[in-house]
Image (cartoon, rainbow, N blue to C red; front, side, top):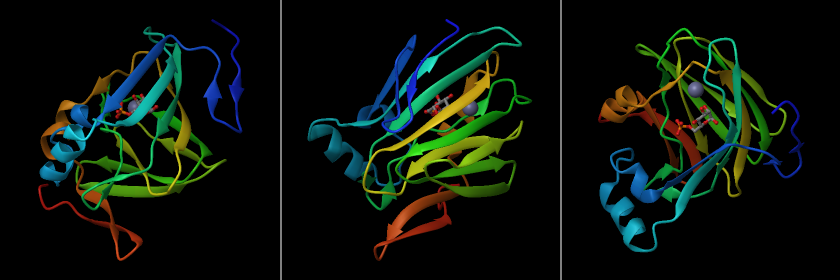
Length: 182
Ligand code: M6P
Ligand code: ZN
């Protein structure tokens, strides 16, 4: 499909061929507070985020998708995406904020960086950097991501150790602290 329509105000994309829904039960092992997550799962297993994407798999092609990351916390940690490296590490990605507010957390080896995102923020994720988004606000955090068709998702590395930093609410404020499990 060549042409699409993205409602920039609402962050709703008209056409997509791939929809991924991640519920609390899909996020086991990603948050420090396992008990809080299990309680949440028992209490109805809410959706944490959804991704609506147009995907192509070949080298030279592009994929693009809208992620809707809902507001909330597991323990002190804000709702977040799983986060991934690209299977082909030398593939970059572009993030564009559409709605709400959040952080993009990036990591390459032992180096960590994070960037605030809101409507209009453009963040270039260079090749070799793992990336995870975090909703630090009280409404949906919605962004568009564009990445090479053959990038692929490597979840294993992050699933094992997480990122070196976690994003928590502390005394009503957003705090980026060392991940004690890392
Ligand atoms: C962005 C892109 C997608 C990714 C999605 C959710 O839209 O980076 O490739 O799938 O965020 O993140 P994750 O796959 O880490 O759960
Ligand atoms: Zn990516």
